[in-house]
Amino acid sequence: MIYLDYSATAPVDSDVIDTYSKVCRDFIGNPNSLHRLGVEAKKLIDASTEQIARILGVSENSIIYTSGASEANNMAIKGICLKYQNRGKHIITTELEHSSVIAPLNYLQNLGFEVDFVQLDENGVVDIDNLKSLLRDDTILVSISSVNSEVGVIQPINEIGELLKQYPKCYFHSDVTQSIGKMKINFDNLDLASFSAQKFYGMKGIGCLIKKDSIVIEPLIHGGKSTTIYRSGTPATPLIVSLAKALRLAYENYEEKYKTVKELNNYLVEKLKQFKVFINSNEKCLPHILNLSLNGIKPEVMQHALEEEDIFISTQTACSKGEYSKAVYAVTRDKEKSRHSIRISLSHKTTKEELETFIIVFERLLDKLNIKGE
Image 1 (cartoon, rainbow, N blue to C red):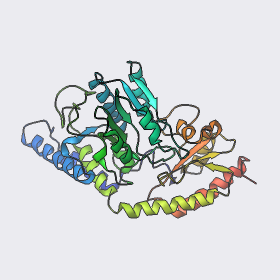
Image 2: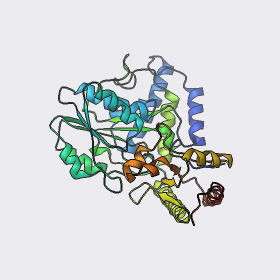
Image 3: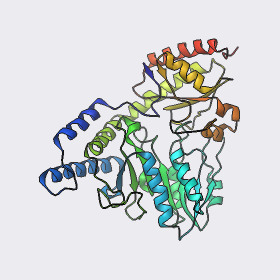
Image 4: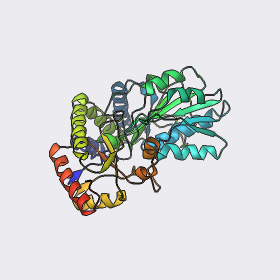
């Protein structure tokens, strides 16, 4: 099997599985319980929270555990807007956001909120001047992902954060799911940030919302204090501890891992240039994601053809719906390219031999489907 869909979900690291299993076996108490087993479980969670905070450079009190990035995005967006709607109902975002950002924004529009989409430059990067022009006294939220999940565009979140400091009534949220473990993130200029463990070889079903201590949000789930007052429910001790383990492993030698992925990306791009395909990802993109458009073939046809060869890629993101990729369209402004795009996502665990095999099979399938260039 050749797995090239790491941006959808990464396989769980064996050490993370071992940690999860050990905690399941040895720490059975409810962390909210006052007896010894509960206290032991809570101590383990507290130690994990301290480790996560240290790795990310945030305070322990800023960490809210969720079921994943989708819940964290909903919690951040709805939580801010419902809490501070008396200050204004204007929100700014981009056309590159994940569906778990766009959907809650659509929900809020039905409640009377106004949403503006900031313009992007030719590489898909936020136009800072246009963002400045959109900001108003009643703007209460700007939500812009650090890295787009389909094309891989990296946004200047530090620069955006610095700009938004001039607007004290406006909060800055970023979905950092595709960046965590792949690049260093400075959380100082972010008010809220969301991510999921499954993107960096952790377990599914656990993620975080990082929220500055001074910010109050309206909870999505009510029912009493857990690890925080903002998210009720019995803390999932094994998942939380495994998240800390996965995060620590992700940032071990991460510069070397990044270099490996960059070299793999360069190799793949050079090989793909011989075919009649259009590469949508550019020099402003994270090397872990390579998006390309095929000429005259539906992406799902290529996806299933590769699947028959035991090679796995994506078309749109796993959570997307629709007949074309809105993210690809936002970057290319070409409906045909956005209807015929596929995503190859790489890892430091990907080997050059795997990519060599992929290229051979890809070329054969292009020949078979009569779309190979002259």
